[in-house]
Image (cartoon, rainbow, N blue to C red):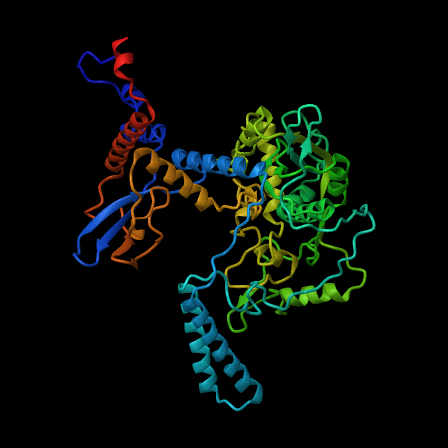
Length: 561
């Protein structure tokens, strides 16, 4: 209420909604991106420029609710279309064109000549350098012609500094053996016929897998006794959980005898341990599923990280001349990553750094296409996809906050990869070291609070799930909207689409246009609030057009009645 002087108080002004926040809320309510990216499109022929806003494409609701909602809806569509397929999703690549064959043939001739000269030693370095440059140019032409992948794979394409290490594939003695069936090249599950009605059912599975227990927990996920709760094992299991999922899929296909397809989502439990929800096409006996889960494990063959050698201010020193880290006391060079692995290979009694396993709890339920259970499972798979792992469960008590802090403390100095700076804490140089590394300050997302140790992908989809990529599903949606509105799709490839915009991130020439990122401070870029209001108006207009097309027009008789 205004004061006697007619002016409002500061408390009253602060209680009033902020116009900018209301604009963002209205934009989110109408499915408009609240963090649009401005791109400047320049017509190369005329020089005319235009600033176009494209959605940011974020998958997190905390950053952009509208984009995250579209991403989640797209994933639900992808899951629904591929779960209960009755026919094989065959994707046949187009035959190569004459131009593509010609580029590959030229690449083969240059490669053969280069290898011949290098083997016989009849070429000087300048000749080899010229042939290498020609090979690089041909590889660029091959990629530009529309061929996927690479003609050859370089020896260091995996990113490792050394050769690939081969370890024994002999199974551990403390896990059960798995049956193995002959593999068939099919992805569609088995069909069952009801003898009474003759109706054919093709059921699938919804599987939930969890990690082992680290100690008793309460209903809110906090440990009963934090002093005995195994936070180190919990941290290491979380860091390597994605590899365990890969092993489970391999064993699942080996036992099932066909190429099992899956759509899976990784979510945290209340105790903060990740668990897996997986929709699989086809069925497998539950007894075999439990056997597969019990027999699945992943061994991490890394050097030991149990003894702390450097901490606090006593840290290894970087030597610019040699590009290595030295012991600050003795000046000795710390063992490199490859040297540490060599010592591990030479030790006949060496044990793996860590072994990840699933817990005993394995839940599997049969799901039939078109049932309410199928719809419920799809909603459950997409439930937390727009949230950070740390935000999936609300922290309401001090004990829950302390539980998160203790897990983060365990993760802080735990090595997350061969390149993790935490290896210096244990006297080993990380793979491909560089200056400025400090234990406890690894920049990998696995150590961030919002990820809680899990750095893998949240959505895992097999390649033959629906026979389409995510971009294909997105194109299907756009085609449906254009067909409903009776609009012919644009033939200019430079126009981009509303979901992603043009395929550029910097200044790039494409066709008759040049695209570049526009800065918010550029004079031709309107303020963000104004752009949001304009986008909301366009969204309302498009929605009205779509509703008008979808709503049938009443006939003269119906209007008269």
